[in-house]
Length: 191
Image (cartoon, rainbow, N blue to C red; front, side, top):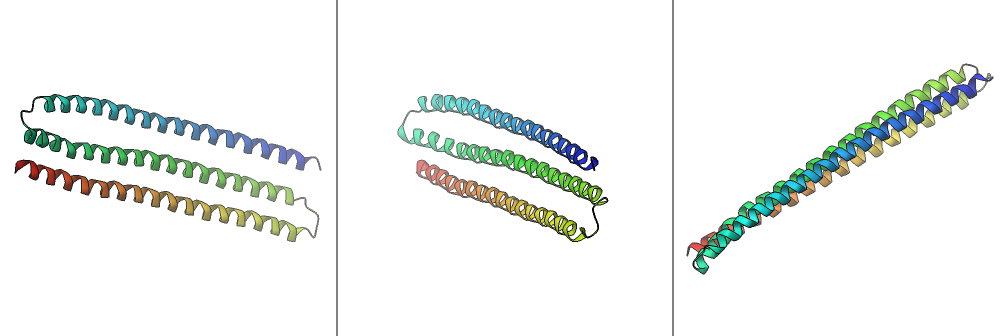
């Protein structure tokens, strides 16, 4: 009779330890991702400052308005391309984090479900006769909860994929008009 509380206690302790391990892993992944975002932002700012300095130097050496327009136009395309590349890198980092979180959550849920079913099997070995239906109902409820989680996880993945696709489309849609405007301005400057 005392074995059942001990089994629940051991299972609870193992569950808490597993959750702490997952939390530690997710925290580590979060900090790694934040570090990537900070590195990306620092590189972008550094590049932007260098480009701005070079642009100002070029603009200060122009002799007439048409040359100024030509120099300014020439800088538009690379700046748009850099903004697009930044957006894509940021989306890649976010997608990577989402994938890591999903993977960790799936593994944790699967492990907890497995351990819970093992515990139920162990506890039910000593269950009184006639409790088979209650045990089957409990196992069914656990299975349904797992199925619900899996559906939720699939939906979350689809939402993340949709967000990533929409972000990439937005970046692409931004790139096309920017390139067209740069070409149009360059043609106008040549006239």
